Length: 138
Image 1 (cartoon, one colour):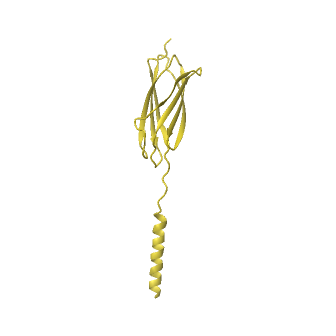
Image 2: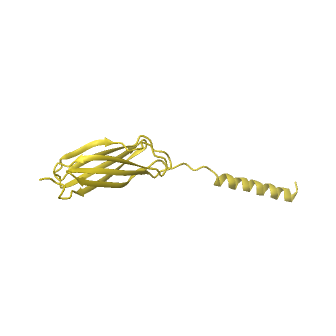
Image 3: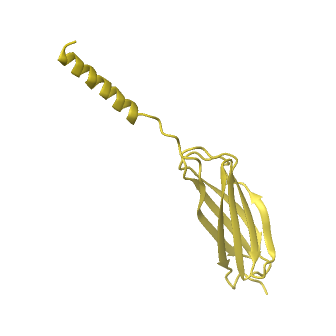
């Protein structure tokens, strides 16, 4: 073989090796569903809760549910249950929302535990809020 043919062959092999190295498919990040917004509106001795969630991962999250536990300032249980978002599966960067209404029973401060569950994990958030005094019936 001539020198130029050997150099050409080495250049082609190096080019193929570089293409294979940089085009190796990378594994997608697993689904990670997080709460991006928690809105609590108070009126008529009730709290209306709106929760926005988002999938920050690259894989799709399935079977999404949101468990909420709400206690008042004395530790009394006001709400304990599972709600479902408007969309129970989220692709990458998609959002969804869930709603519920909680009877306050003269609470002045409420503590929320929010567990977001999906097929690949769980995220837990804690929130606390003061109830406006005009909402609390005496």
